Image 1 (tube, one colour):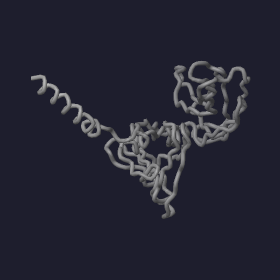
Image 2 (tube, helix red, strand yellow):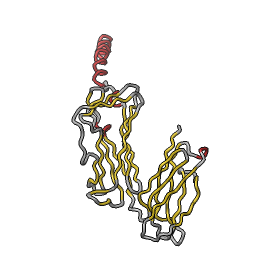
Image 3 (cartoon, helix red, strand yellow):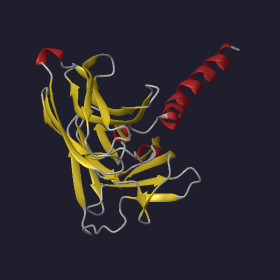
Image 4 (spheres, one colour):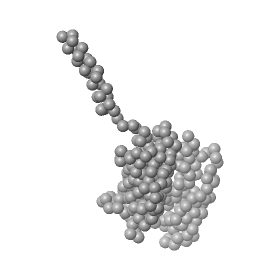
Length: 261
C-alpha cells in the first residue's frame, strides 16, 4: 500500500511541471498599454483627444502599416455614421514606428464642426469610436484587439442662436475672448468659474445693434495668479437672461486647463 501511495506521489510530481507549463499565461508585456479617446462637445465643434499610454516598465514600439495612426468615427443615435476622420485624407503607404518610453504617452487631437453632408447634425447623443491602427508591438502581433478600440458617448448641443465664432487666447490668468453675438434683449452676461469657484462675477455687456444683426465683441479677462485653480478647467460662460431673469442660450468657452499635480 505504501508503494502504491509513493508511486502516486511520484507520478503527481512528474506531471506537475507539465500542468504548470500548460497553464502558463502569455507575457503581459505586450498588453502594458492603454488607448482611449476623450471627446469634448463644444457649442460649435467637437474636439477629440486620442491618447496612447505605455503603462509598463519597458519601452514599447508600435508599428503602423501607413502614416495613419488611428481612425475616428461618429455615429448618430440611429447608428448612422456622420463623421469619419480618414474621409478625404491621403496617407503615406510606408511602415512607421512610434516608440513610447516606460510610463510615457502620446496624444493626438482632432476636431469636427458638426457638419454632415454640408448640414449641421441634430442635437442629441452621439457615439464616438476610436481605433488604433498599429499592427504590432515590439515586433509581435497585438493579441488583444480590444486594447485597440475605445468608444465614448457625447451630447451635441443645438446651434446657439445668440453666440457664434467665439474663441479664446491667452494663459496664466490673462485672456482675450472674441466672437459675434446678437442678444435678443440687447445685452448679454458672462461669468468665469473653475467648476467649484466663481472667479469673475456676473458682468453685463450692452449691445446697440438689435436682433437679428450680428456684432463682434471682445472681452478681456484678468485673474490674479493666486486665484487660479491647481487642477481644473477655467471656463467663461456667456449667456442671456429671459424677461423673467432665467439664464438662457448658455455658451461655455474653455480658457485654460490646469494640471499642477
